[in-house]
Length: 299
Image 1 (tube, one colour):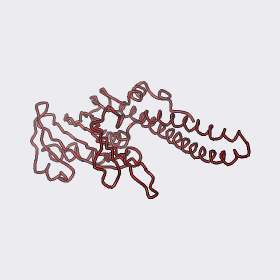
Image 2 (tube, one colour; image 1 turned 90 degrees about the vertical axis):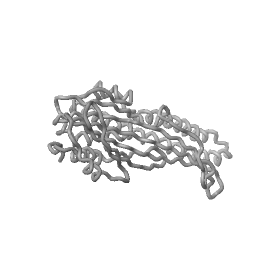
Image 3 (cartoon, helix red, strand yellow; image 1 turned 120 degrees about the vertical axis):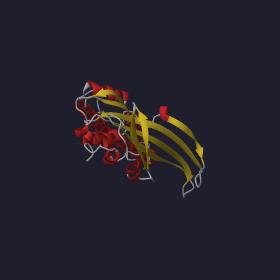
Image 4 (cartoon, one colour; image 1 turned 135 degrees about the vertical axis):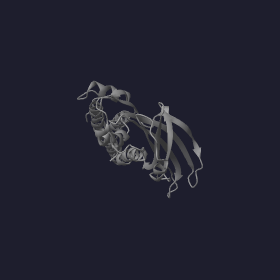
């Protein structure tokens, strides 16, 4: 089993982003898309190798248990070599387990390739090719440095529930548009890990881990010069159950901001779901629809 090589086949910019699990700076659109494509390839390859390492570890554990049972049965016949099987399977399980953990530490969150990349592709014709895009992305996901709380919560029907919450403002992209206006997309996630201790039907103590993920995406539109906004149109284009919109003052002009929320669940590991790119792009287009004189880019 070959581990994904950080530098093999990747540009220096992608290698740096893979090592840091982050991407920052100012970028020409095509170059940014190319680097994001490389990060996608790395992440997909790394996920495939990680799955193989995990499956190999599980098989070694299963075979180790079977060989241990056989060893106890055959040991009565004085066959000392029967213990080689359990020892070998245990060593391999440890090896693949360590490999699995190491590969997981290289994992990048899926949000950038499931949401941001297709959103940039949809907006490409509206981006001013002569200007650079400002990018700040943290792709590490729910790591210890982002933990904001940890402790036991009301267990309900369980014996104990330990809850850990991570706050992850993972991305911000500032896009210069062809009509001179500026669009900013911001992404934030809150990860909640719940480790549940409970008693099974047989009376044995068992453990289960569940994850949930709340996401927010914000679209801000700043016109090139002061323009008026149709606030009634802005409100009518907002889903009050999951969104909120308001005007903002920035860089000497009045802009508009629309924020939307999503929620996802997962078992065993953090959810890989992300806000749909079309909905994120739609947020920006709805802002254009509420800006008087902004129809030249909205479609």
